[in-house]
Image (cartoon, rainbow, N blue to C red; front, side, top):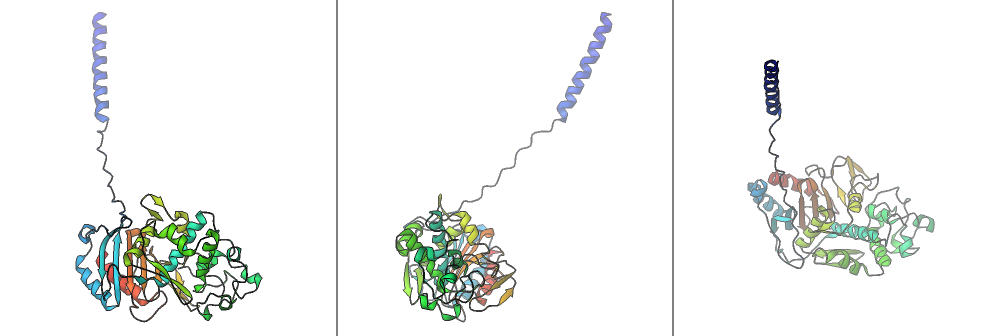
Length: 365
């Protein structure tokens, strides 16, 4: 009996050991986890300094042989300055046609987007609300329209170019220059009346427009420059690097280093279609990649993207005579062009945009 018990015990132990060995063999070896690549963080140039770090095209895998042809093309097109930033660092910076790093130049209508940015800040501070009518802030009779029609015009209408005021009378913004043509929101037309947003913000903040702009935006990102009255318009002048600083702030969703300066949700709204009349227009920002677009001074809808050669997600600030801020989120790019008109005088978009992007693509792709 003892012998039989010992034999059964031995068989059981051999069976258990074999099963345990097989079970251990079946446990997969622990795989070494793949390291998550560390993406380079965005660089922000220091305030009140000429220091601005650079990066090389070779590090980005760009086609360096295409840089010189691009710069030669820009020079022949009356360009004064050109900058490309990638994640905040300067990749290309060039000055031509007697312009320098310290020379100021006008933003023209590209500077409209500064008004947009400050409107977002003022709304975040509960000083204004874009859905309020303009007359809530600057009083009635600021147009020649009837009070009923004037009260239809909201701050959002000013930022989306849908005031309904007659754009054929020029860019004057005195009451006798602002005549009713259609109800607010019913017509898209490029009009200098957007400048009334600066009056709205000045009234709501109980400060001058210049002071509020300087305190809330300009000094916080190290911009230089000044607003200069030119007839009926208020035009911003600065160096090219100051324009690039603003472009970088936009590309980083309104943040500068660790500080949220412009609310991100507001910028998402500002750089999306703001109305159904011109799908390629946000709050004074032009939007690429939409099914159609309209241009200043003509009531015609064009099919296709604003700049077919540019990335579909690009949005841009466009100013008279080809002042440009291009922002491309998918490529972490900010591109600045200042200068005289590349070809014929224009108010915003021109054939130059598409030609320029054809040459930029040869460099970056």
